[in-house]
Amino acid sequence: MNRYWSKSIAGLDPYTPGEQPQDHAYIKLNTNENPYPPSPAIAKVIRDYEIDQLRRYPDPESSALIESLAAYQGVDRNQVFVGNGSDEVLAHAFQAFFRQDYPILFPDISYSFYPVYCKLYQIDYQQPALDEAFCINIQDYASSNGGIIIPNPNAPTGIALETGAIRELLADNPESVVIIDEAYVDYGAESACQLIPEFPNLLVVQTFSKSRSLAGLRLGYALGHEDLIEALQRVKNSFNSYPINRLTSAIAMAAIADEDYFQDCRKRVIASRERLSTELQRLGFEVFPSSSNFVLVRHPGHAAESLYSELKASGILVRYFNKARIDNCVRISIGSDDECNALIAALSEIIG
Ligand SMILES: *Cc1c(COP(=O)(O)O)cnc(C)c1O
Image 1 (cartoon, rainbow, N blue to C red):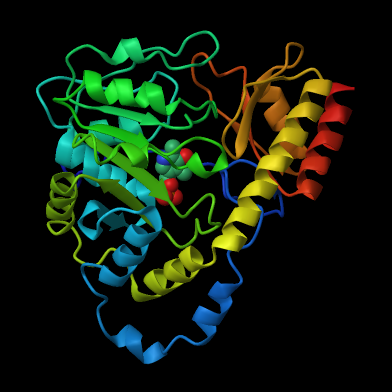
Image 2 (image 1 turned 90 degrees about the vertical axis):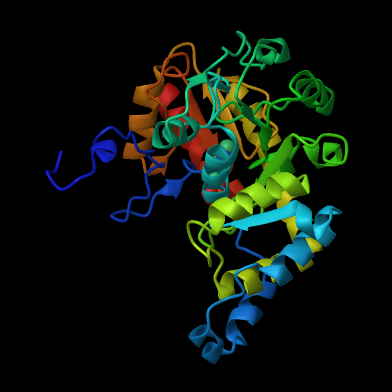
């Protein structure tokens, strides 16, 4: 602890992102990035960009981007909030909604950023356990709580909830904000967006990082009742007036407009996931049923940590979590077909 630090800083427990090593050209199957490049329409936006515009601050309300997201998602413009990555949107949402008298709830196996935000904003939390098959049991979320957050599909399990279960969760918890983190929804789950008109306590969060191949752009957004969106704007306008830069807005709008390319990439990843799952099962892996762009797997004869290290030694990065209940699993992001083939070849060697 440095003597210049505020007291609260010493007590934080920051998130550790997946490795992004610069030393070596790994096959990166560890951070759920998209194996395909962003829409080719983006190259033109960047090429034609009028550089002089960068002299000026961007629109603090990101109106043009919000209009295009609202039109795309079929909601009103005052039901959309944008931020610098969905991680920023989530952080604002924790601050805006979750500092309550009761603890908030999220699954014991879930996105490991949630407890980090809780520590940052001094929010108590409880973590109902997933069942043996790593599924969420909605009944576990019926007790008094200060809010609920669930990724759908869940990460790092990849398992999706049905819209009926989310509806039940929302109806059971009218006093709490329920956040559905849909970082991976485009790979096979049904979006809870359709429930927004019915439930003023629902906030849906999505990102351009995964299914739109734009992790480097940093853009995420939330959809929900206008009163929830207004709360997020209050936090944002007390933190950073301009989280979305001019180029990000222009690039994101081009990505939204290129629906064919988006659908094509999304379907290719889903097809590769199904093929990879079959091949992993053939090697003796148990593969949890994934609706996302990664698979969580375990092997009865091989410890996950050594699989991770041996794959790394052969130039392939996957994600290992040293965490109760999943420390015998590795999470593998779906790569291109060549990358998946290289993974299967390396695993065949290791497993023999
Ligand atoms: C990747 C991920 C995010 C963060 O996405 P960014 O928009 O890149 O900040 C949020 N939630 C979950 C569950 C994720 O896996």
